[in-house]
Structures are given as C-alpha cells and as structure tokens.
Length: 480
Picture 1 (cartoon, one colour):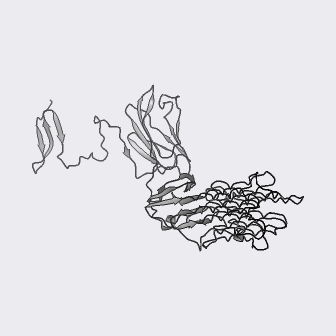
Picture 2: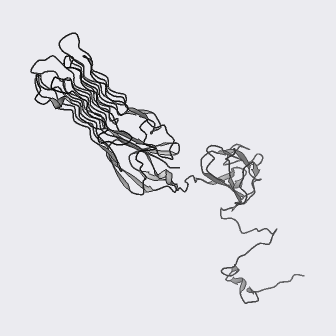
Picture 3: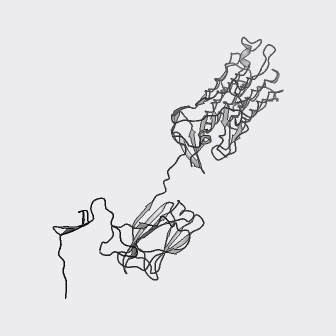
C-alpha cells in the first residue's frame, strides 16, 4: 500500500516557509537561511558548477591522493612531490594551486589513477606543473580523454609593500632594481617601502668630463664622481662610497628630475705663437640633492716669450681638475684643483702640473681615484685613474682623467701622448699626426690633450684637445 502526502508549502512554527512549491519551482529555505546537510549525509542530483571545496585547513607538502570535489594548496618549498588523482568518474573534479609561488623551483607532478589519461595523453602518463604561481582544474570526462584541464592559470603576482619606481633603463639583479640614466629623465617613485631602510636608495652620479687643452695641452679632468650604497644593499661599491659619512637620499612618492652632464669640448687647434684657450669644463649631473661637478678643462700653450696670459697654462678646477700645459718662466703651469666645490667623500682629484718649458711636458687630468700625473722632462703626465663600482651588478670603472699631449720639439726627444686614466680617460695626441682621444661616453672620462708639434706658422695639422665623455646617473634599490 502506497501513501501519498500532497502539500504546496511546509512552514515552521513561526509561519516561515521551509519548502515552498510555486509553478513547479521549489524553494528550500527563506532568504537569509542556511541549508546544511547532516553530518555523514551526501548529496546527488544537484551537479557542480566547476568549483571545488578548497581544503584551506590542510596545506599539502608531500605525496597524497586527491578526492573528487576538492581543491588543494600544494607547498613545494621543501621539495617537489606527486598528487595522485582519484579513480575517474564522469564529472569528477579536482583543483590544485601553487601555495607560495615555488613550482618553478620545485615542481608538482599530477598522476592519473592506473591507466587513465590526462588531456587524452598516454595511458597512465603524468603531467608536471613547473610555472611559478600555477593553478589547474581537472574534470574527468570519459575513457578517451580522461581528466581534462578546463582551467590553467598563473597567479604569481604578489602583493607588495616594497619600493616601486619608474624611469630610465631598468634592469634587475636578484632582489634589486637598477635605473640607469644616460641622458635627462625622471625617476618617479609611486610607492615607498614599509621598511624604512629600503627607501634610502643607492646611487652613482658622475658628471661630464672636461675637454683637453690644445698644442702641448693638458688632459681634461674627469667629471665629479659621487656614490652612496644604501643600508639595504649588498653590491661592491667603489672606494668613494659615501656610507657612512656621505649624503644619503631617502626617497618619497614623487618625481625626481635627472640631469646627466655632457662632456666639455676640447680646446680648438692652436696656431704657433697664438694664445690658446682652456678646454671646456664638463657639465654637472644631478639627482635629488646630489650634484656632481663637471670635470675641469685642460690647459693649452700660450704665445711664445713672456705670455700675455700666463694663467691659460693652468688647468681649470672641477670635479677633477684639468692638467696644466707646461711651465714658463712667468707662468706656474699648475693643474686645476679637484673636488671643487668640496663634498665628502671627495668627488675627484687635481690635475697634474706641467713640466719645464725645455720639455714642453703637459700634465694629465685628475681622476676620481687619483690625481693627474705631472709632466716631467719631455714626458707628458698620464690621466688619473677612475674608480670601479658594481652598482649595475658588474664592475665598471668610471671618471678617469685625460692624458697629457705628446711632445715634439723638432728633435729626437719627442714623446707620444700619455694614456688616459682607467675609467674612460682619453689619451693625449701624439706628434706629428696622432689626434687626441675623447673621453668615453657615459663614464665622465676627461678628454686627451692636443699634441705638440714643430714651432711653425701657420699651423696646418689639427692639434686641438679632445672632448670629455658624458656622465651617467644610476639608482638602485630593493624591490622584493
């Protein structure tokens, strides 16, 4: 005997609908109610919408067998492992997700049950998840395809409280970003770090090198070199690292204009008996409160006899000073002063003094690491060496002084041009036809001095000084 109960609504004691039938639509529970299956009960006929129940209370760290309808966060930090899929049944679903972005270093293997397939591949064949932040959802279809991946996404982007900035050419070294400016630009900070020390950035600011002097010309001085290694950084800095004792730059969320100094022009070709000019000083480079001063120009020869302007045989002051031409009875032949204006640590050194007029020996331009070598008895002075920093993750020397010009007095005592200092300094010109060498671009190297030559007029062979090299600004900080 079969019993039948026919109702449209079932209500609780308060008169609220528990089950309500209306035009073949059955509503279970009222708005705001929670419908819960009893412990141990199972459901069928409701189907799934491509979702799983994520097992957030059980992070997987070793090989295990997945269950239908569940999603798992897999932590491979301590080593890769295998997820064994359950026996396939049509509609079964499993999801897996990289727990903390480690699948790229320690992979996760997904293996089917027995001879079942994944994505129609070989019977019993596994797949390996090797992408950082990867997540995958698999649904079992049938014996032909087996488990089918219906979703495969990468979620490796992480929320960050680190410094974020833009501008210049950006490269990465480990946990550090490096912004390199070889010309004018803007360093824009859009977010600062919540770790205060990481907002004090590392920087290297090098100015343009000075141009070399003409005809027995002194070498141009290197552009001023200033560096600061931030407290959160770990590269090998130059000997001029200003931490501690130098000027720190702690950035905030704003735009910082960047100036990159150009190299100074060399003194033009000088005729015998004429008055030469100094090589042009390089231009300053600037980042925030940091200004590196352009290198001083090298000195040129002046007129024969008591010079009308003896001061032109003196190198110009600058970040590093320009080299002198040569001494004359009424001229001092002094190299230009470095670290002008003064900063701490020093941004450069003085140029070399000139040798006696009997040897026409000019001095080399000063470099960031050493002063220019003085000229002596027919031997021109070499440019002062620059310094080496690994702020870009590779050791690079910058800010070398230009070499003094080779001498030529018409006799066998002629000397070739002196070499420029390490870090982009240009060599001096060599008589009778060797031209002075320019400072290397983006090093702040000084230009070489223009060669000496027989005392003939008019002057037909170029003997002008070479241009200094342009500067550079580099900013480095921890970004993760």
